[in-house]
Image (cartoon, rainbow, N blue to C red; front, side):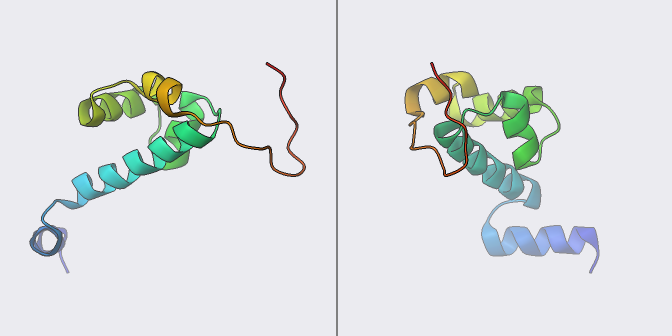
Length: 90
């Protein structure tokens, strides 16, 4: 199947383009990581498939209307450390 045919069929089935769908999934994964980890923006970006924190910030702000750092400040929930994970002191 050609890339064009795939894109057309994907849009017909899902109502969105493959690129938008992938961006949406990456944003959901980034939200989860921002809420649940204290990883740097570079680490979050790389973990969800973007090369740089700048790309993460661009897509995040465009889609959610807030930068990822503000999102983290509002929604971060410190959970109990996993076994074997060193505890950081504040």
